[in-house]
Image (cartoon, rainbow, N blue to C red; front, side):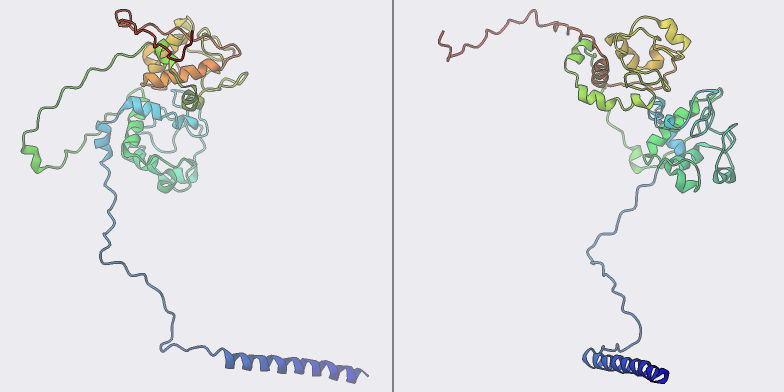
Length: 346
């Protein structure tokens, strides 16, 4: 019985093999592949049109020394709010996500006390010269692979120069600026240049009350993201780098609970009226020297009005808007008679 069962199994296997062989032979007969004349693989190569213009290479950046010569420190200070997301810029300030940046220009790499630098940063060595800062801030991970700095970098060369120029000022003894190389000689340099037209005088700003009358709260809310880099705007929210700004309009200066205000801010006194906020936000350090607010300010009068109009709404009982002054020439102008309504049936 066992021998009979074994024969059945072997017969089934042999039958299956014969069926598979038959199918294979039949498939070869139906689908016969065409053999190439030469062995190998054909690679399709896209031919470029003869009329296609060659790609232009990116314009070469000016050296950092050249860009620093025309850098704007106040612009760099404004842009540095991005750095302040992870770094402290105050003298003696603590390390945060990144090391303190006071005195960073010409400082040896990976040398600030108390900060746990990455192995890649320690291995790089050297100093944070102007040129090295420029390379690093272009693409931190690309220049020092493995650095803890995950920021994507500043792609604009002049923006980097403005920021580095401001970082240079954060020192007890700022390093002298490098000497800019002379510009390449041009044939047109010998030709007499036409006299430059005189610049028009800056227009006088409209009073804050006038600007608030046409302020756009939605724009102010959008612009307030700059404020939120250092301030909390929520009711009951904590103080951060700066004090909480909920209810700031008409609030006495240096009065928000729990915030350690500067001596300069405490000494200034008074309230944050619309006019005072407008002056302060134009140039904080210029208006109250010694304030902790390092932001350079908003130079656009319209932008300041939009932001102040939005800050006014951050209150349980928003202060009434000030009455816009009457234009100076309106009193002497004859008033136009109201238009008659022809459809008025009296």
